[in-house]
Length: 181
Image (cartoon, rainbow, N blue to C red; front, side, top):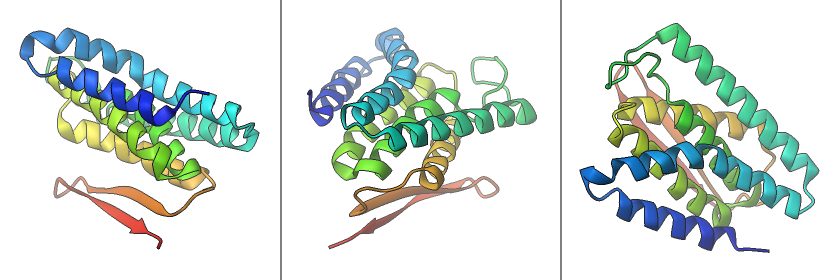
């Protein structure tokens, strides 16, 4: 079986290089459109490869609830996108990508989590550089998915846990981290 760490690291590196100039926004946007589904899809394949049916169910619950919450918030807030479109807040692309990344982290540990988070971060970058979202939209989408994964996912390796925290009123965000020695 392929090594998830290597695959996601290479994808994140290549997309980062593609995103280095404004003329490259189309490739970056395409990456975001594909990776929003590819990251949770890879997470499902990892679980299936490990014969982890309980994990697949937890991923499905995480993805479904975080996507539902995000879509509901989009329609309630109805905030204009930087490009003039509707429903900017929160980012659905980021929610989808982060649902897979956070699941991998909470279920299988940091070894699977960090490359998935890197790949998901590039999805967020694609949304901001493509003028579809502001950073707060992306952070909110990530936080919704991460917190939903935290609730639904039973941890098999809990040596390192990272949880984003945000306060919309003060427009602050940060990270809580725990490391077990």
